[in-house]
Length: 495
Image (cartoon, rainbow, N blue to C red; front, top):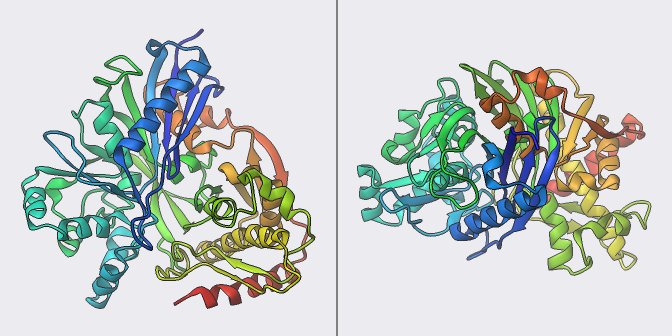
């Protein structure tokens, strides 16, 4: 078997997916391992660090086994990760200081409100491109440090390290030798200057986060370090790429040109549009972010995030018990021609772009005695598609033009009914690739560029393949009427 096998680790919100990818972009091995979610209080979401690392170990071993590869046959490693999830640990021992606070966590809503009242939101927007919202890492760090004076003193002295999951995995993979992140993940902390790609002293002071605890910011593609003391590969394998999951998915969809867009249907749904070499400051509630940095240059994207997507289907399965498996939702929702007036607003973790209402709550309304579980399932799929349309319309206002093609990926993109609804309600052609694990593929593509497996972006673009295209059939008038009905329900979900 030829060399140049790439190990791609996609450390996600509910599980870790690992791919072994060959030099032709072929998947030679694959495995996914889920881990538990922890909900200590309403609006709080946590992960145990050991659960995450165990899922990585198990998924890597299974992927290598399914590929029939020895551990010596891995050329390089790429990492993609849930972005804003926050962990603190001791530098000397590597011991985590509690659970990770997940990006969906809302516990810092009060802190964000207080910082806004102090007039900090415009400063944050200008410097980081973000908004003061519990979604991002900065207020999570501040909350953790505010719980203990001794912890804050240790952080100020450099004894305590902060990291998002990319930094956490890099620290583990290198035997504690490297504390670093990349610009895509750093751009989601509220602490990085969007233009200089460096930690911003003004933002760090405003949020009372000591710079001594922050990782080095490095380009997305390049050598971050080499493995040491891990069981699944020998020492010395280079880690040549790290990226936030949504930026990795944009890369995995080969959206390399300005105007190219993708929407990932995962735990949440995330729409990103490549905006080229300059950040586009949104006036419509969306966010400029770093798409990737490489070879001394940087590409930016405009992003809209909805915090709940596939998680809503899991709620139908686990919370309401109307599904045996998440995949059953398509057949159940297809049993009725429409939702019969039932509306679903998936604001279980507040509302992200373009509304930014952290205290909003999920809403199911329009129920009658004639409502069946099929209508509820249909309303969930329609609500997921419609929240993405609201995102898309906001981004189109910023861009000044319509998006006519949107690449789709993630686990829920396998649902043909959801993809048809998305095309109908958005008016855009939705194109699904043959490989829907584009986050992991993006990590593999980046790692391959960093290791010299591929020379340039066009080499990578040639590896992307289309599976199916979904075209809109609704008239523009019916599309707009349907979106307006959903918006009325969404306003009722706001506090």
